[in-house]
Image (cartoon, rainbow, N blue to C red; front, top):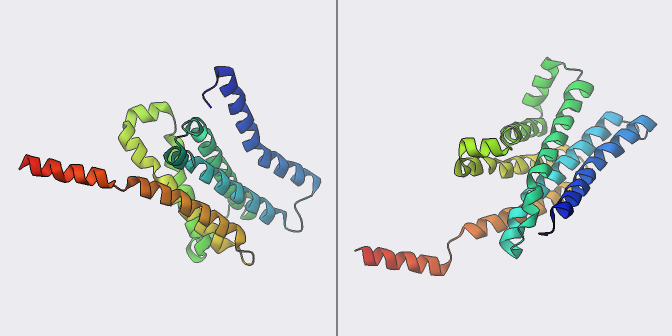
Length: 212
């Protein structure tokens, strides 16, 4: 998707609108009383679900480049990653402000006693530095190599997020298992790409022999 600047702007606007849609639907259902018998839990579930969706989508461009040499998805990775953080922030904010009414003592007890909340807090904490350093200015300030290493925490955050979702559900494990499967594929592609190829190993051995 090289395209003209106008085509890229249209694509960016379309993706931005698509990322806003789940939140708009949540707001509509909340205003209409369509969140069921437990609206807070429903809001938390929806926000958490879409956090994981956007987080995994943000991790997808590199595997697509490795497998198919597609470079255009990377243009939208930052925006989708920031949407993942925004939904995570709203998910956490709903829990802290609406579910717990900013009761710090109750929140701390939850974090300590309920392991799915503990791992969820860890996932959000890992996303914070990624969101803060998502700008080009931070890439220049940290240097690309250090910036790239820092942003590999997104995989750790995704793992924590999937575990949070798995421990959170009580009956239907299919959705978190689907997320886990998708994440496993993305990680496998990245790890396989890091393995040295036989030709590279042979070349390395020859260079060592020559240096002797």
